[in-house]
Length: 93
Image (cartoon, rainbow, N blue to C red; front, top):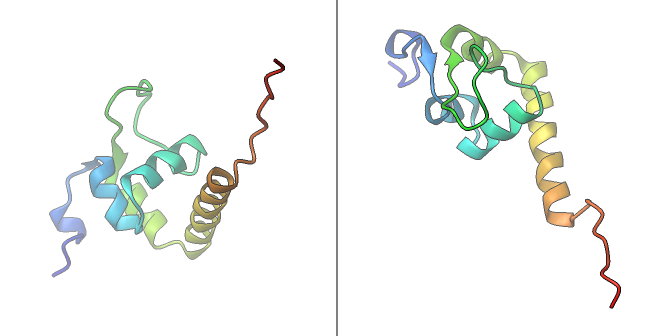
């Protein structure tokens, strides 16, 4: 039986449990949430623990189109971070 079988999971999942189910890191889950590709339960504040529905996460993990969007979003985020695409102001001395 798989470690991530639906019978072994609680109804509310933390980012540490969601990350391996989706095949990403904890940071990846936070990135996906900030990009609105993952929706936490309720209306958590920015600095609170975020919980995700077991049914929602398992449904997304089985959706090939969503996994493609997730992968593209994480790759684009990493590329932007590595290539510093944000504009920086040059200080005039």
